[in-house]
Image 1 (cartoon, rainbow, N blue to C red):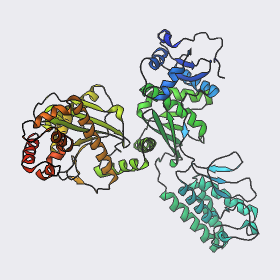
Image 2: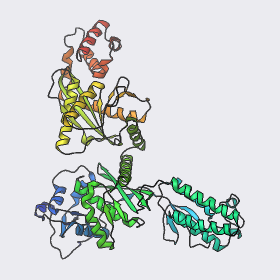
Image 3: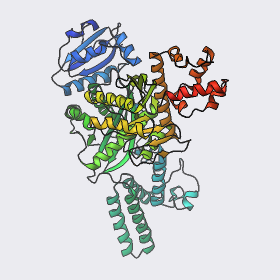
Image 4: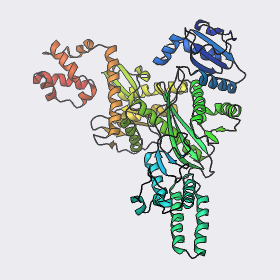
Length: 607
């Protein structure tokens, strides 16, 4: 059981006494009724942070359960944030509280294993790195890249791959991919020399490897061993060609890990691009659930915790961690942690040049995609990526906000705004508006008002804007919404979707984009559009019940309660009215003469 961390410390309080906490840097330790430690955190202000747990109803279930179980709160004041980070990390490592963030590695990344302890070492594919004396290279981004490396090593250096050496040479020997130590086709010394060269290759020491082979080639030539020299020259050419095909991100040759992150709906996902000797050699992905609200301090603390825990899980060859500019305030604190705990000058910094910016951007975009995969289906993530390409926007539209208008003859007009993240509804961010500016049917002006009110508020609150805005309608509605953004001085990605032919109108060119009906990208837009329409109509019907709408048809002879209900249920929809014919009404059992009067009344609503 996790008892009190400091028995001599008598500063614990009850949840009802949080206002008595000091407004200073420190670590707080939350315990349940049994005295078990269930959560440990750090804060710039103990008073503000701890009070935030009890001041409101939290949206995520995990935080609600945590708060219900808190009985006592211990706290320890320290001099600065670096000390708080060190203390927090050590206490979490010691007590492992069940509610603290646990970073889950999202997959087993492949490695290359070279069994250097064996008499004739072999090169094999590996999924883990036990301490068995072998050398491990990686992690690599895919199993395909590992097998590609192994294949190249076999061709260049003829290293065996068999689990047990056979009693006669195998196929690999006959296709010139193994030197067959099993039947003494090569002695131990020569084989070891080939293994050493293979290790240089796997370690990315291409220049050193080429120099060694060049010396061997010249020696063979001087001894008139021209065939041997030619074989070595072919190896050098192959290594140089392979090196040229490797994408060099950083000419400085640094060893650094680029930490990208994304957060939404109580989940945070990290992607780390691993760079060694200036080349990206691998990528790893981790996810975690965040306790309490997703404010800046909580997220920054989670990033700091992640870097500390990730370092212990890494190859420890990095000299720097590159993080986003939003987290520049925690760089010095984490550097102090590494100096104190590891006596190591680890550089924690934001990108310094365009190459580092590009590599961090890749990590951030991957983290957003991976998070979308966590929150939605993989095909939705692919559709979002395709949508970005189709629209020609430079960011994957993870957050899409859709707008629609609902009204009958301009009365009780309302607007809806729905929010989708990763292709799925994020209902906590839905908004609705009572239109104030118009009492006549003017969808353009109504749309402009809704968009203006939404993004003026986001601007005033300095909140995050969506990656894409979707307007329900054609070019006119799009232009109305755009004029609202222009008034606010905002440049956001915005399009409209017209239902008749599913035409996508953009700001680029006059011709709409028309996608195939089975296009996943179109399905994403349709989902947002249809949901915004549903939400708008639901709000409209809430404000003005359908029973009131029946009065619109009171003056038509031959329309009773039953036929009124048919009209309301079947046709009282702006988009249906736009394409409505008299025959459509007749098909519902209404006589033609009466149907013609109903048709005129319905059309009049929007003209």
